[in-house]
Amino acid sequence: MATRAPTSGTLPGSIDETLALLAGASYVAERSLATALFLALRMERPLFLEGEAGVGKTELAKVIARALGRALVRLQCYEGLDIASAVYEWNVPRQMIAIRIAEAQGGARRDALEAQLFSPEYLVKRPVLRALEPSANGAPPVLLIDEIDRADEPFEAYLLEVLSDFQVTIPELGVVSAAAPPIVVVTSNRTREVHDAIKRRCIYHWVDYPDVATELEIVRRKAPGASESLSREAVAFVQALRGKGLFKSPGVAETLDWARALAALDAVSLDPATVDDTLGVLLKYQEDLARVRGAEAAAILEEARAAAA
Picture 1 (tube, rainbow, N blue to C red):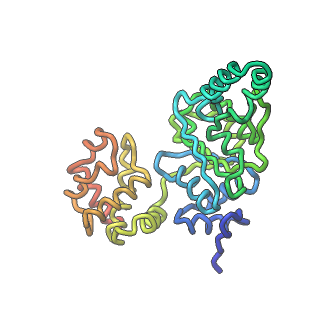
Picture 2 (cartoon, one colour; picture 1 turned 180 degrees about the vertical axis):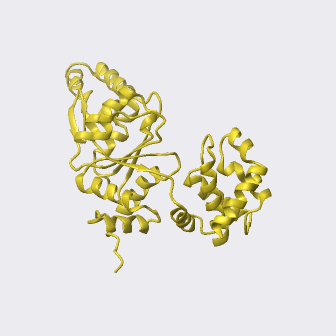
Picture 3 (cartoon, rainbow, N blue to C red; picture 1 turned 45 degrees about the vertical axis):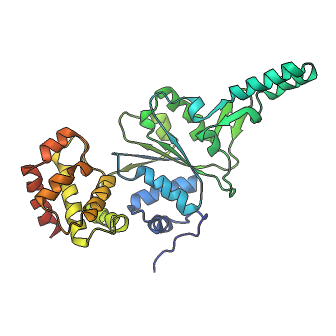
């Protein structure tokens, strides 16, 4: 008997329901990933997803928000990210205007303003702080902390309070806590090692490249314009390409882009000329393109055809 996905807004009650929830949103997941997600939801712990770029880590957070009817709050990490950009800052221009108005009015107005300048009225809420508040429908949002490995280590350390207790401390206001914990998904492309203290607070899962059957199912769902035979050849080609020791192997995102591009060209099957002309959809570094294009691509294509047959 097929497992039904939970209704919108209801958390899955089992691993099978979690798989059904993801499948209902056209996200093809292995059972191990569904297990990690189920445990993160059940235990109210952040889910830490690590793996190569383009394997579906960010997409999972989007799917969770969409499937559960939650708002998605995204914090895109980068070098130099600070609290003012990620958590909160004070609206200084508005504070200055209020000060000038109070000075002009003088007396009691000026005294009253001193107690108001650092009130929520003048607070600018950034993604982390917004994620501690319920969405418009009253449900906690999904907080996506994307590519945490790109942030600096001091900011990573700051996140410990958020990931441990779902709260932030604002010196002028005190502790701001979530009434109900948000669903937190943290991703890393492993451009550097993330500190163990972050990982200890999370349910960890390594997202690998999918096997042939899984990737083919993803292409069927996400790139329906490509024929079955073309999809098989494209997936087999990408799978073979990943074993060639390239500087940057194509992820699932590139496979989908390539399948859509081939469909847009009305390709029925792969041939060496079409592969050479469209390699830039799959490979993003000139060194990889120069290495693969031509005879190497033709050889990989023959290997892919044999695997897809």
